[in-house]
Picture 1 (cartoon, one colour):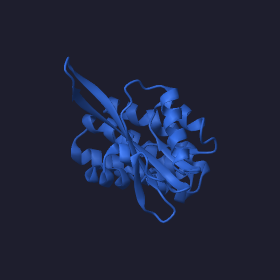
Picture 2 (cartoon, one colour; picture 1 turned 90 degrees about the vertical axis):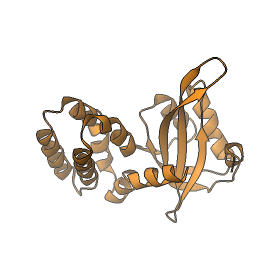
Picture 3 (cartoon, one colour; picture 1 turned 120 degrees about the vertical axis):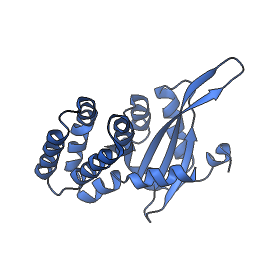
Picture 4 (cartoon, one colour; picture 1 turned 45 degrees about the vertical axis):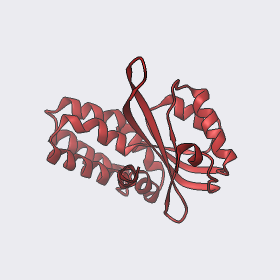
Length: 199
């Protein structure tokens, strides 16, 4: 299915979560090669199935661009987004807020995964991501903070890694005002990886 056709497909009225992936590609034009961000939006419905909602290639990324795109989701039938696993992107956040005021924002675990990947060996990176997943799924925030302190101690010599994780930790801790099940949905990186393979 072409992307233009995909962006016209009728959507379900409610998604439990919408995940946003960010990819960077190089596009060749007549004059030059330029780096371009591509965003892939994936919806998790009430039955647990995942839909590719659309692929977005903003040439000029602004709040108004995203406000228009989210407004078009309403035109396609999407009335309610319960939660959005979102990137650190103020344009997207403001665009969502203009259309879906009650949405819960969750930090993107895949974004943390991707940004920390280059600063650690593959084996150690697996340990870091497993601990972050455990942290996210604890019953109580005190238990999560203990895992975070262990992580800081174990990788204290890797300043760049610690800096990246610390950038997101307050948002992760902020998710503890919601139920464990909500946090499990938000932290499901399998969703991203499997969908990327299909695309």
